[in-house]
Image 1: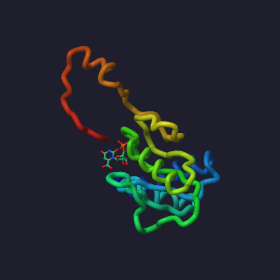
Image 2: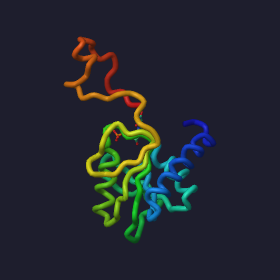
Image 3: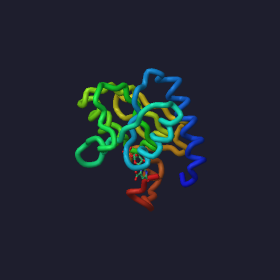
Length: 149
Ligand SMILES: O=C(O)c1cc(=O)[nH]c(=O)n1[C@@H]1O[C@H](COP(=O)(O)O)[C@@H](O)[C@H]1O
């Protein structure tokens, strides 16, 4: 999302949804990189503080904000692909003594465990496991691999 005004419009919709479902939230948590930028936009609409959690490698806080009391956190991201990033962040937050209310994302292609996920829209394309993929059973070989969106 290259246009900050457009990003802010989406962030406002996301903020309204979070405010409706989780009015008790005290902290938004963003995953670098895109989730960190987005979470700051969303937090501005909710008047909430924001903190960033590194989810690749050893999970940890970005030094900008290391919360000092127990928070009721919502993880904010743009896309959930495998769900790994938000799962790692949620486990880290719980280990750190915070409550994780859930995850807010634009689109999710995974169900990341027991985490409650709010999305803005369903995925615009179907996802199959390799063994259930109709194109694979029709004999088509993958044209691209390792693609994210
Ligand atoms: O952060 C990225 O590089 C990224 C690139 C991309 O093409 N697609 C994509 O989903 N991401 C990010 O990867 C994360 C989701 O991936 P999973 O952890 O697999 O669910 C989100 O933080 C996205 O912002």
